[in-house]
Image 1 (cartoon, rainbow, N blue to C red):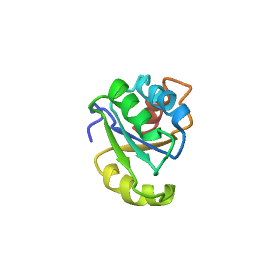
Image 2: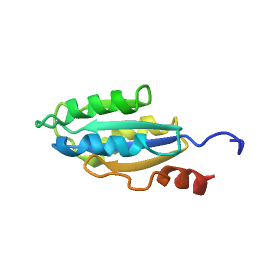
Image 3: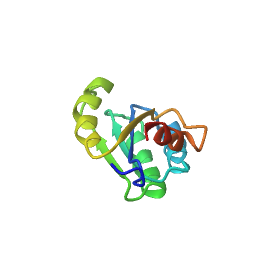
Length: 118
């Protein structure tokens, strides 16, 4: 890759039953100064509205820059990484991980990651 090309970051987000936190987590990704970001959000069979909250926040804040998956049964983070992340990661330069009940506090976190990777 030429150094002038932007670094593509895949933000891998997983969660189960974390509806109150999902919008903040997604907004923290959308606020990043590094713009070449695609979110892969995996809902691990939540029963509290996590999927709907994630879908709404992704559409509002990362429209056209996300993939949303809902597991039909609880599979766990290792499965989600092995199955869902493995395929998606091929299209990006860097993978960052953020649990759906956490947030990125520094708006330059992904820019710093991309810079370090470069």
